[in-house]
Image (cartoon, rainbow, N blue to C red; front, side, top):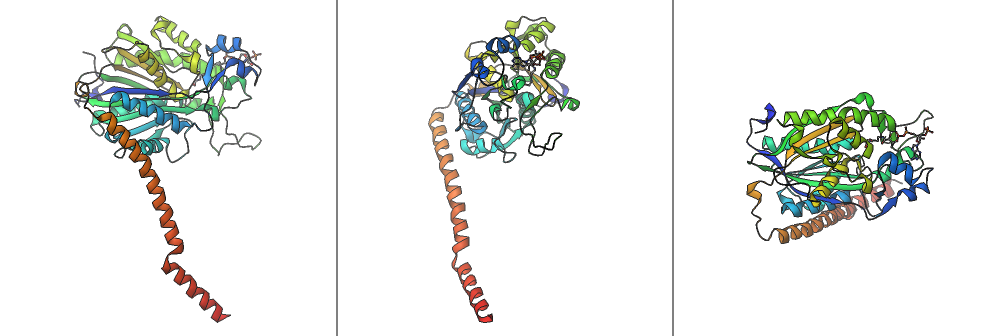
Length: 395
Ligand code: UT7
Protein backbone atom coordinates (compact mmCIF):
# COMPACT_ATOMS: atom_id res chain seq x y z
CA UNK A 1 0.00 0.00 0.00
CA UNK A 2 1.36 3.45 -0.78
CA UNK A 3 2.45 5.52 2.20
CA UNK A 4 0.03 8.36 3.03
CA UNK A 5 1.14 11.76 4.34
CA UNK A 6 0.44 11.72 8.09
CA UNK A 7 -2.12 14.58 7.97
CA UNK A 8 -4.34 12.46 5.75
CA UNK A 9 -4.13 9.20 7.65
CA UNK A 10 -6.71 10.05 10.28
CA UNK A 11 -9.80 10.20 8.02
CA UNK A 12 -11.12 7.24 6.13
CA UNK A 13 -12.18 9.21 3.06
CA UNK A 14 -10.38 9.53 -0.26
CA UNK A 15 -11.01 12.05 -3.06
CA UNK A 16 -11.60 10.43 -6.46
CA UNK A 17 -12.05 11.96 -9.89
CA UNK A 18 -15.45 10.70 -11.03
CA UNK A 19 -16.25 13.10 -13.88
CA UNK A 20 -14.32 15.15 -16.42
CA UNK A 21 -15.00 17.46 -19.32
CA UNK A 22 -13.45 20.16 -21.47
CA UNK A 23 -14.53 23.06 -23.66
CA UNK A 24 -12.47 24.97 -26.18
CA UNK A 25 -13.58 27.74 -28.53
CA UNK A 26 -14.11 26.68 -32.14
CA UNK A 27 -11.99 29.58 -33.44
CA UNK A 28 -8.53 28.31 -34.45
CA UNK A 29 -5.52 30.60 -34.77
CA UNK A 30 -2.57 29.04 -36.59
CA UNK A 31 1.08 30.07 -36.43
CA UNK A 32 0.70 31.52 -39.92
CA UNK A 33 -2.19 33.71 -38.68
CA UNK A 34 0.17 35.01 -35.97
CA UNK A 35 2.92 35.66 -38.50
CA UNK A 36 0.53 38.18 -40.08
CA UNK A 37 0.36 40.08 -36.76
CA UNK A 38 3.94 39.99 -35.42
CA UNK A 39 7.39 39.24 -36.80
CA UNK A 40 7.50 35.47 -36.34
CA UNK A 41 7.11 32.28 -38.36
CA UNK A 42 5.44 28.91 -38.15
CA UNK A 43 8.89 27.31 -38.14
CA UNK A 44 10.18 29.40 -35.20
CA UNK A 45 7.09 28.76 -33.09
CA UNK A 46 7.06 25.02 -33.79
CA UNK A 47 10.80 24.62 -33.15
CA UNK A 48 10.92 26.70 -29.95
CA UNK A 49 7.58 25.65 -28.40
CA UNK A 50 5.97 22.71 -30.25
CA UNK A 51 2.80 24.78 -30.77
CA UNK A 52 1.01 24.61 -34.15
CA UNK A 53 -2.27 26.32 -33.32
CA UNK A 54 -4.38 27.56 -30.44
CA UNK A 55 -8.09 28.30 -29.82
CA UNK A 56 -9.30 31.88 -29.44
CA UNK A 57 -12.64 32.83 -27.83
CA UNK A 58 -15.15 34.83 -29.86
CA UNK A 59 -17.17 37.78 -28.55
CA UNK A 60 -19.88 35.59 -27.04
CA UNK A 61 -17.41 33.30 -25.25
CA UNK A 62 -15.77 34.10 -21.93
CA UNK A 63 -13.94 32.38 -19.08
CA UNK A 64 -17.30 31.74 -17.38
CA UNK A 65 -19.07 30.34 -20.48
CA UNK A 66 -16.15 27.98 -21.21
CA UNK A 67 -16.01 26.94 -17.53
CA UNK A 68 -19.77 26.30 -17.56
CA UNK A 69 -19.54 24.14 -20.71
CA UNK A 70 -16.69 22.06 -19.25
CA UNK A 71 -18.66 21.69 -16.00
CA UNK A 72 -21.76 20.41 -17.83
CA UNK A 73 -19.64 17.75 -19.53
CA UNK A 74 -17.96 16.73 -16.24
CA UNK A 75 -21.30 16.41 -14.42
CA UNK A 76 -22.63 14.28 -17.26
CA UNK A 77 -19.68 11.87 -17.01
CA UNK A 78 -20.06 11.80 -13.21
CA UNK A 79 -23.80 11.19 -13.69
CA UNK A 80 -24.32 13.71 -10.93
CA UNK A 81 -26.80 16.51 -10.30
CA UNK A 82 -25.48 20.04 -9.84
CA UNK A 83 -27.52 20.18 -6.63
CA UNK A 84 -25.31 17.41 -5.22
CA UNK A 85 -22.22 19.66 -5.38
CA UNK A 86 -20.92 21.10 -2.12
CA UNK A 87 -18.20 23.31 -3.54
CA UNK A 88 -17.16 24.84 -6.88
CA UNK A 89 -13.62 26.12 -7.38
CA UNK A 90 -12.55 27.89 -10.56
CA UNK A 91 -8.79 28.24 -11.02
CA UNK A 92 -8.22 31.18 -13.35
CA UNK A 93 -6.02 34.19 -14.06
CA UNK A 94 -8.59 35.69 -16.40
CA UNK A 95 -11.75 35.81 -14.27
CA UNK A 96 -14.92 37.42 -15.50
CA UNK A 97 -14.64 40.08 -12.76
CA UNK A 98 -12.36 40.75 -9.78
CA UNK A 99 -15.57 39.88 -7.94
CA UNK A 100 -18.06 38.22 -8.07
CA UNK A 101 -16.09 35.06 -8.66
CA UNK A 102 -16.40 33.21 -11.95
CA UNK A 103 -17.23 30.19 -9.76
CA UNK A 104 -20.35 32.00 -8.48
CA UNK A 105 -21.54 32.58 -12.05
CA UNK A 106 -21.03 28.90 -12.87
CA UNK A 107 -22.82 27.94 -9.63
CA UNK A 108 -25.84 30.04 -10.67
CA UNK A 109 -25.94 28.75 -14.26
CA UNK A 110 -25.73 25.14 -13.09
CA UNK A 111 -28.32 25.59 -10.36
CA UNK A 112 -25.85 24.21 -7.80
CA UNK A 113 -28.01 25.54 -4.99
CA UNK A 114 -26.14 23.83 -2.13
CA UNK A 115 -22.62 24.71 -3.27
CA UNK A 116 -20.12 27.28 -2.02
CA UNK A 117 -18.09 28.87 -4.80
CA UNK A 118 -14.82 30.75 -5.13
CA UNK A 119 -12.01 31.46 -7.60
CA UNK A 120 -8.46 30.41 -6.93
CA UNK A 121 -5.49 32.40 -8.22
CA UNK A 122 -2.29 30.41 -8.67
CA UNK A 123 -1.73 31.08 -12.40
CA UNK A 124 -0.76 27.98 -14.39
CA UNK A 125 -0.53 25.89 -11.19
CA UNK A 126 -4.08 26.88 -10.26
CA UNK A 127 -5.77 23.64 -11.26
CA UNK A 128 -3.41 21.47 -9.16
CA UNK A 129 -3.75 23.89 -6.21
CA UNK A 130 -7.54 23.70 -6.56
CA UNK A 131 -7.46 19.88 -6.67
CA UNK A 132 -5.46 19.92 -3.44
CA UNK A 133 -7.96 22.29 -1.73
CA UNK A 134 -10.87 20.14 -2.95
CA UNK A 135 -9.15 17.00 -1.68
CA UNK A 136 -8.65 18.56 1.78
CA UNK A 137 -12.35 19.54 1.88
CA UNK A 138 -13.36 15.97 1.04
CA UNK A 139 -10.90 14.34 3.42
CA UNK A 140 -12.01 16.57 6.30
CA UNK A 141 -15.62 15.58 5.65
CA UNK A 142 -16.74 19.15 4.92
CA UNK A 143 -17.59 18.35 1.28
CA UNK A 144 -18.64 15.21 -0.53
CA UNK A 145 -18.66 16.42 -4.14
CA UNK A 146 -16.46 19.22 -5.45
CA UNK A 147 -16.37 20.64 -8.97
CA UNK A 148 -12.86 21.85 -9.87
CA UNK A 149 -12.46 23.90 -13.05
CA UNK A 150 -9.47 25.44 -14.79
CA UNK A 151 -10.67 28.09 -17.25
CA UNK A 152 -9.00 30.91 -19.15
CA UNK A 153 -9.44 33.47 -21.89
CA UNK A 154 -5.77 34.38 -22.16
CA UNK A 155 -6.41 36.05 -25.53
CA UNK A 156 -8.09 38.95 -23.67
CA UNK A 157 -4.98 39.86 -21.65
CA UNK A 158 -2.25 39.30 -24.23
CA UNK A 159 -0.20 42.05 -25.78
CA UNK A 160 -0.81 41.16 -29.43
CA UNK A 161 2.29 43.12 -30.43
CA UNK A 162 4.63 41.16 -28.14
CA UNK A 163 5.84 38.13 -30.08
CA UNK A 164 7.49 36.73 -26.93
CA UNK A 165 4.08 36.07 -25.35
CA UNK A 166 1.22 36.25 -27.89
CA UNK A 167 2.44 33.18 -29.78
CA UNK A 168 2.24 30.97 -26.69
CA UNK A 169 -1.23 31.25 -25.22
CA UNK A 170 -4.75 30.06 -26.01
CA UNK A 171 -8.24 29.87 -24.48
CA UNK A 172 -10.16 26.93 -23.02
CA UNK A 173 -11.49 25.18 -19.94
CA UNK A 174 -11.34 21.77 -18.30
CA UNK A 175 -13.27 20.46 -15.30
CA UNK A 176 -13.33 17.48 -13.00
CA UNK A 177 -15.77 16.32 -10.33
CA UNK A 178 -14.03 15.04 -7.21
CA UNK A 179 -16.06 12.80 -4.97
CA UNK A 180 -15.57 11.20 -1.57
CA UNK A 181 -15.10 7.44 -1.40
CA UNK A 182 -14.20 4.97 1.29
CA UNK A 183 -12.17 2.98 -1.22
CA UNK A 184 -8.37 3.32 -1.24
CA UNK A 185 -6.95 5.52 -3.96
CA UNK A 186 -7.86 8.86 -5.48
CA UNK A 187 -5.53 11.73 -4.62
CA UNK A 188 -2.56 10.26 -2.74
CA UNK A 189 -0.23 13.21 -2.24
CA UNK A 190 0.52 16.74 -3.33
CA UNK A 191 3.33 19.24 -3.14
CA UNK A 192 2.50 22.97 -3.35
CA UNK A 193 5.31 25.54 -3.57
CA UNK A 194 5.78 29.24 -4.26
CA UNK A 195 8.68 31.66 -4.66
CA UNK A 196 7.28 35.17 -4.68
CA UNK A 197 10.73 36.62 -5.38
CA UNK A 198 9.93 35.76 -8.98
CA UNK A 199 6.66 37.70 -8.99
CA UNK A 200 7.98 40.15 -11.60
CA UNK A 201 8.96 37.66 -14.33
CA UNK A 202 5.42 36.60 -15.24
CA UNK A 203 2.36 38.70 -14.46
CA UNK A 204 -1.03 40.02 -15.47
CA UNK A 205 -1.53 43.37 -13.74
CA UNK A 206 -4.84 44.73 -12.44
CA UNK A 207 -5.98 48.33 -12.99
CA UNK A 208 -3.67 49.47 -10.17
CA UNK A 209 -0.40 48.78 -11.97
CA UNK A 210 1.47 51.49 -13.90
CA UNK A 211 4.74 51.46 -15.84
CA UNK A 212 7.72 53.80 -15.25
CA UNK A 213 6.02 56.52 -17.32
CA UNK A 214 2.87 56.32 -15.17
CA UNK A 215 0.73 54.62 -17.84
CA UNK A 216 -1.64 51.93 -16.71
CA UNK A 217 -0.62 48.43 -17.86
CA UNK A 218 -3.24 45.75 -18.24
CA UNK A 219 -1.50 43.29 -20.55
CA UNK A 220 0.47 40.18 -19.66
CA UNK A 221 4.22 40.50 -19.16
CA UNK A 222 6.62 37.53 -19.27
CA UNK A 223 10.40 37.23 -19.17
CA UNK A 224 10.21 33.98 -21.17
CA UNK A 225 13.71 32.63 -20.72
CA UNK A 226 13.59 33.27 -16.92
CA UNK A 227 10.32 31.33 -16.68
CA UNK A 228 11.79 28.59 -18.86
CA UNK A 229 14.81 28.23 -16.52
CA UNK A 230 12.57 28.22 -13.43
CA UNK A 231 10.31 25.54 -14.89
CA UNK A 232 13.14 23.21 -15.87
CA UNK A 233 14.68 23.70 -12.39
CA UNK A 234 11.64 22.90 -10.20
CA UNK A 235 9.28 20.59 -12.09
CA UNK A 236 11.25 17.32 -11.95
CA UNK A 237 12.02 17.80 -8.25
CA UNK A 238 8.38 18.44 -7.33
CA UNK A 239 7.31 15.31 -9.26
CA UNK A 240 9.90 13.26 -7.36
CA UNK A 241 8.71 14.66 -4.01
CA UNK A 242 5.01 14.04 -4.70
CA UNK A 243 5.71 10.50 -5.93
CA UNK A 244 7.81 9.75 -2.85
CA UNK A 245 5.13 11.17 -0.51
CA UNK A 246 2.60 8.84 -2.15
CA UNK A 247 4.89 5.93 -1.26
CA UNK A 248 5.57 5.18 -4.93
CA UNK A 249 8.49 5.24 -7.32
CA UNK A 250 8.59 6.76 -10.81
CA UNK A 251 8.27 3.24 -12.22
CA UNK A 252 4.77 3.04 -10.68
CA UNK A 253 3.64 6.14 -12.56
CA UNK A 254 1.96 5.38 -15.87
CA UNK A 255 1.28 8.93 -17.06
CA UNK A 256 2.46 12.43 -16.21
CA UNK A 257 0.06 15.22 -17.19
CA UNK A 258 2.15 18.40 -17.11
CA UNK A 259 1.13 22.01 -17.62
CA UNK A 260 1.27 22.53 -21.38
CA UNK A 261 3.62 25.50 -21.75
CA UNK A 262 6.32 24.39 -24.14
CA UNK A 263 7.26 20.97 -25.56
CA UNK A 264 10.91 21.77 -24.81
CA UNK A 265 10.10 22.07 -21.08
CA UNK A 266 8.34 18.67 -21.18
CA UNK A 267 11.35 17.15 -22.99
CA UNK A 268 13.77 18.62 -20.47
CA UNK A 269 11.78 17.32 -17.47
CA UNK A 270 11.52 13.86 -19.07
CA UNK A 271 15.28 13.82 -19.57
CA UNK A 272 15.97 14.88 -15.97
CA UNK A 273 13.65 12.15 -14.65
CA UNK A 274 15.17 9.64 -17.13
CA UNK A 275 11.69 8.86 -18.44
CA UNK A 276 10.65 8.45 -22.03
CA UNK A 277 8.80 11.52 -23.32
CA UNK A 278 5.90 9.20 -24.29
CA UNK A 279 5.10 8.86 -20.54
CA UNK A 280 4.07 12.56 -20.63
CA UNK A 281 0.72 13.68 -22.02
CA UNK A 282 1.15 16.50 -24.51
CA UNK A 283 -1.37 18.42 -26.61
CA UNK A 284 0.44 21.76 -26.59
CA UNK A 285 0.59 21.56 -30.40
CA UNK A 286 -3.23 21.95 -30.64
CA UNK A 287 -4.07 24.40 -27.85
CA UNK A 288 -0.87 26.23 -26.87
CA UNK A 289 -0.62 27.30 -23.25
CA UNK A 290 -4.10 27.63 -21.72
CA UNK A 291 -2.68 28.37 -18.25
CA UNK A 292 -4.89 26.90 -15.48
CA UNK A 293 -6.97 25.04 -18.09
CA UNK A 294 -4.11 23.15 -19.69
CA UNK A 295 -3.86 20.23 -17.25
CA UNK A 296 -7.59 19.34 -17.15
CA UNK A 297 -7.80 19.67 -20.96
CA UNK A 298 -4.77 17.37 -21.35
CA UNK A 299 -6.29 14.95 -18.81
CA UNK A 300 -9.57 14.81 -20.75
CA UNK A 301 -7.75 14.06 -24.00
CA UNK A 302 -5.55 11.44 -22.31
CA UNK A 303 -8.71 9.67 -21.07
CA UNK A 304 -10.29 9.96 -24.52
CA UNK A 305 -7.16 8.38 -26.06
CA UNK A 306 -7.40 5.43 -23.63
CA UNK A 307 -4.20 6.39 -21.81
CA UNK A 308 -5.79 6.28 -18.34
CA UNK A 309 -7.02 3.00 -16.84
CA UNK A 310 -8.42 1.83 -13.52
CA UNK A 311 -5.58 1.45 -10.98
CA UNK A 312 -3.14 3.67 -12.93
CA UNK A 313 -1.02 6.16 -11.01
CA UNK A 314 -1.01 9.64 -12.57
CA UNK A 315 0.99 12.74 -11.80
CA UNK A 316 -0.27 16.24 -12.59
CA UNK A 317 2.23 19.06 -12.39
CA UNK A 318 1.75 22.79 -12.85
CA UNK A 319 4.17 25.75 -12.85
CA UNK A 320 4.01 29.43 -13.69
CA UNK A 321 3.23 32.90 -12.31
CA UNK A 322 3.85 33.44 -8.63
CA UNK A 323 6.25 31.96 -9.18
CA UNK A 324 4.25 28.95 -8.02
CA UNK A 325 4.37 25.26 -8.79
CA UNK A 326 2.55 22.12 -7.67
CA UNK A 327 2.57 18.37 -8.25
CA UNK A 328 -0.10 15.85 -7.30
CA UNK A 329 -0.27 12.06 -7.47
CA UNK A 330 -3.48 10.08 -7.76
CA UNK A 331 -4.60 6.52 -8.30
CA UNK A 332 -7.31 6.36 -10.95
CA UNK A 333 -10.57 4.60 -10.09
CA UNK A 334 -14.26 5.31 -9.58
CA UNK A 335 -15.49 4.55 -6.02
CA UNK A 336 -17.79 1.52 -5.78
CA UNK A 337 -20.74 3.57 -4.44
CA UNK A 338 -20.82 5.58 -7.69
CA UNK A 339 -20.56 2.68 -10.11
CA UNK A 340 -24.26 1.84 -9.96
CA UNK A 341 -25.75 4.77 -11.82
CA UNK A 342 -29.28 5.62 -10.66
CA UNK A 343 -31.79 6.02 -13.45
CA UNK A 344 -33.39 9.32 -14.45
CA UNK A 345 -30.36 11.39 -13.35
CA UNK A 346 -29.95 12.79 -16.85
CA UNK A 347 -33.54 14.04 -17.03
CA UNK A 348 -33.28 15.52 -13.52
CA UNK A 349 -30.05 17.27 -14.53
CA UNK A 350 -31.72 18.88 -17.54
CA UNK A 351 -34.70 19.92 -15.37
CA UNK A 352 -32.33 21.49 -12.81
CA UNK A 353 -30.53 23.49 -15.55
CA UNK A 354 -33.86 24.79 -16.88
CA UNK A 355 -35.02 25.71 -13.37
CA UNK A 356 -31.66 27.43 -12.73
CA UNK A 357 -32.14 29.64 -15.81
CA UNK A 358 -35.68 30.58 -14.75
CA UNK A 359 -34.67 31.12 -11.14
CA UNK A 360 -31.97 33.63 -12.19
CA UNK A 361 -34.50 35.46 -14.41
CA UNK A 362 -37.11 35.51 -11.65
CA UNK A 363 -34.63 36.86 -9.11
CA UNK A 364 -33.75 39.70 -11.53
CA UNK A 365 -37.41 40.48 -12.35
CA UNK A 366 -38.17 40.52 -8.63
CA UNK A 367 -35.29 42.94 -8.02
CA UNK A 368 -36.48 45.16 -10.90
CA UNK A 369 -40.05 45.17 -9.52
CA UNK A 370 -38.78 46.04 -6.01
CA UNK A 371 -36.88 49.01 -7.43
CA UNK A 372 -39.96 50.16 -9.38
CA UNK A 373 -42.10 49.79 -6.25
CA UNK A 374 -39.59 51.83 -4.24
CA UNK A 375 -39.73 54.66 -6.83
CA UNK A 376 -43.48 54.71 -7.42
CA UNK A 377 -45.02 53.41 -4.17
CA UNK A 378 -48.12 55.44 -3.03
CA UNK A 379 -46.33 56.32 0.26
CA UNK A 380 -43.34 57.77 -1.56
CA UNK A 381 -45.50 59.64 -4.11
CA UNK A 382 -47.57 61.02 -1.21
CA UNK A 383 -44.43 62.20 0.67
CA UNK A 384 -43.12 63.85 -2.52
CA UNK A 385 -46.47 65.60 -3.09
CA UNK A 386 -46.53 66.87 0.53
CA UNK A 387 -42.96 68.15 0.25
CA UNK A 388 -43.85 70.04 -2.94
CA UNK A 389 -46.94 71.57 -1.27
CA UNK A 390 -44.86 72.74 1.70
CA UNK A 391 -42.19 74.31 -0.47
CA UNK A 392 -44.90 76.09 -2.61
CA UNK A 393 -46.47 77.53 0.60
CA UNK A 394 -43.13 78.80 1.86
CA UNK A 395 -42.37 80.58 -1.41
O1 UT7 B 1 2.57 29.14 -18.42
C1 UT7 B 1 3.52 29.83 -17.71
C2 UT7 B 1 4.81 29.28 -17.96
N1 UT7 B 1 5.36 29.88 -19.14
C3 UT7 B 1 6.35 29.25 -19.74
O2 UT7 B 1 6.69 28.18 -19.32
C4 UT7 B 1 7.06 29.92 -20.88
C5 UT7 B 1 8.50 29.61 -20.77
N2 UT7 B 1 9.32 30.24 -21.80
C6 UT7 B 1 9.35 29.81 -23.07
O3 UT7 B 1 8.62 28.91 -23.44
C7 UT7 B 1 10.37 30.40 -23.98
O4 UT7 B 1 11.23 31.24 -23.23
C8 UT7 B 1 9.78 31.23 -25.16
C9 UT7 B 1 9.09 30.31 -26.12
C10 UT7 B 1 8.81 32.27 -24.63
C11 UT7 B 1 10.90 31.95 -25.89
O5 UT7 B 1 11.83 30.99 -26.36
P1 UT7 B 1 13.38 31.20 -26.08
O6 UT7 B 1 14.07 30.12 -26.77
O7 UT7 B 1 13.58 31.33 -24.61
O8 UT7 B 1 13.68 32.56 -26.84
P2 UT7 B 1 14.30 33.91 -26.24
O9 UT7 B 1 13.27 34.67 -25.47
O10 UT7 B 1 15.61 33.60 -25.57
O11 UT7 B 1 14.62 34.66 -27.59
C12 UT7 B 1 15.55 34.15 -28.57
C13 UT7 B 1 15.43 34.98 -29.82
C14 UT7 B 1 15.45 36.47 -29.54
O12 UT7 B 1 16.12 37.10 -30.60
P3 UT7 B 1 17.65 37.62 -30.41
O13 UT7 B 1 17.59 38.60 -29.28
O14 UT7 B 1 18.41 36.40 -30.08
O15 UT7 B 1 17.93 38.23 -31.74
C15 UT7 B 1 14.01 36.86 -29.59
O16 UT7 B 1 13.81 38.20 -29.98
O17 UT7 B 1 14.20 34.70 -30.45
C16 UT7 B 1 13.50 35.92 -30.68
N3 UT7 B 1 12.07 35.65 -30.56
C17 UT7 B 1 11.32 35.33 -31.61
N4 UT7 B 1 11.60 35.16 -32.91
C18 UT7 B 1 10.61 34.83 -33.72
C19 UT7 B 1 11.30 35.68 -29.44
N5 UT7 B 1 10.05 35.38 -29.75
C20 UT7 B 1 10.02 35.16 -31.09
C21 UT7 B 1 9.02 34.81 -31.99
N6 UT7 B 1 9.36 34.64 -33.29
N7 UT7 B 1 7.75 34.61 -31.61
